[in-house]
Length: 104
Image 1: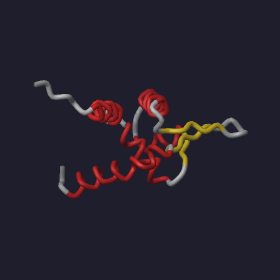
Image 2: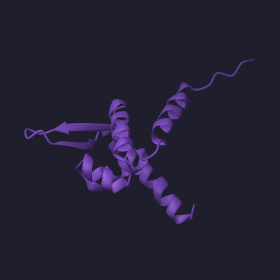
Image 3: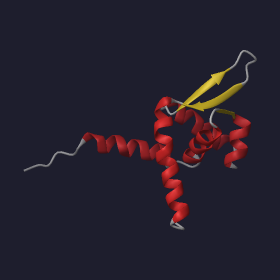
């Protein structure tokens, strides 16, 4: 008898693959804590990473629907959470808090 794997596990694996890339979680957490949007420069400074890494993560997070790229009339670009990532943010915050509390 073959046991069929729940297809949601595959989706969880995909999400974890995105979130475990360098600075992905940190970017999401910074945006969550900012209660709004942030510029590339502010995000880069906040996560203390190279521009290349931050740019890659922002593009990946945008492609999978976790970030919105906003271009204003003055052509300035900011990034903000999507509704999807806003619902994920408390989970990410819980993992952060767990690590802090449990000295992990």
